[in-house]
Amino acid sequence: MHRLFTITSTASVTLFAALLVYTCRPATKDLPLVSGVHITYTASDADFPNPERGFYRYSETRTSQFTGLDATELQGYRSPQQTSSANYEVVSTLVFRYYILDNFRDGPISDAILTALDADMDAVRSAGVKIIPRFVYTVTAAAGNCPEGFICPPYGDAPKAVVLNHIQQLKPFFEQHADVIASVQMGFIGTWGEQYYSDYFGDPSGNGGQDYRLTDANWQDRLDVLRALLEAVPEDRMVQVRYPQIKQRYVYGIDAPIGSEPLAAAEAFTATDKARIGLHNDCFLSGPNDIGTYEDYGNSSRPRSSDAAVVTTLRNYMKEEGRYVVVGGETCSDDYSPQNDCESAGMAQQEFADMHYSYLNAHYNNAVNNDWQDGGCMDAIKRNLGYRLVLKDATLPDQIFRGAESRITLRLENNGYAAPFNARPLLLVLRNQADGAIVSIPVPQDVRTWHTGAVQFTAAVLIPQELPAGTYELLLHLPDAYERLAGRPEYSIRLANDGVWEEATGYNQLHHAVQVK
Image (tube, rainbow, N blue to C red):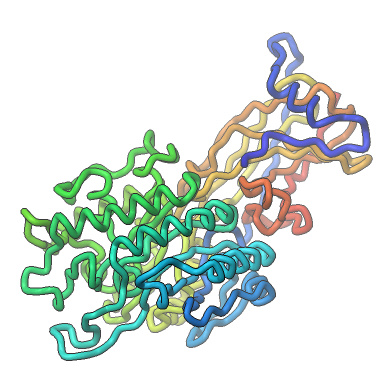
């Protein structure tokens, strides 16, 4: 739930009175104007944890032998650590988790496993991190005598009826733990849940027959699964699909062309299905079409195609989508070098920026990731995955009047590749220098619109009538939107500035005090 504003005070100021002031706004045209002071801030180059962005830590468990998450281990991810086979360290606030339903391919998920899932989320919440879950049935590639050789059918996923029943069973899980779920990946279909090597939903691989295309029936089955998942996941959380064409055909129908219109600004953040379908590319810069990411898989009336025009069209579609939906993934092959290297030989940072990446796997494929450390761009990638909000300067009042609106002007720069993808409030905090009492007042801004580049706005904030007179520090607070996490500093956004972050509170100091009259 979203907070309006709260007051904490030793005086007899009640939250009800504060809300009444905010809701029943007095006429302010005759109230005195306030003077303003201009303050500048210093940017920081430090790499530090911030919620719902950056390199994620990988984990998996099989339901046939469930191993739960450990809160202490998860909490440790917030400090710099080097992963296996990596030549770099990362700080992480995200955990990716494969839930491999390997013993439920022909029946419902047991109550014991549903309880174990709840315990996992309790550990995530306790540790101050968030999770990206993907439910699958197999992550094993069985070699054999088939056209592709390294992976042969049967692959080991589950039929549609079983999948839909499992999604329905998981609906309470998604609802109860949406606060610590950053996004949900579609999963379920095919090996690794990548909607490719499948026994039941069409097999577009070389093992699936000479035609390679997906039929209309295959598409309908896949879209039915996506629809069920969107209905099961709360509307304030996105569901990521593996290929751009999945979203196009869900939104516009099975015959949708690859040139279908991407999400527009006016459609973004509206809780519609179109606004809630994000993307994950698990073969970032791995080849001309990222190993099937940018491909037209055809349908019953149209052949499959992956020529240069198809790749360009789908890449442009994903660039536009990424401005308004969550994008993440992993690297998967180092064969596309030097393109996937640092600039100027490669284009890794430019690709992250073009596609608006919020997160990436810290563990795989480190044949690619290690090259960024060797090439000198890893530090920039670590800082810039997702958002990186730098406060440049502010114009703030030195006097404010109870019951009146006061104006603040902030100028920031988002140096990251993307804007925050989940909603959260922006609060102006007034902290009484005499007794430490605070009032948090909402600033009318949607941080999901703070795209890469300059962010500047002037906002009017209403000062509660009952606020005691005195001297107050000004601070900015960007807490989690869920009340259960709103008071947790680990879930608040830290600005990339020297000397502004309060680790104990999750506030960002504006280094200015005002007189409340």
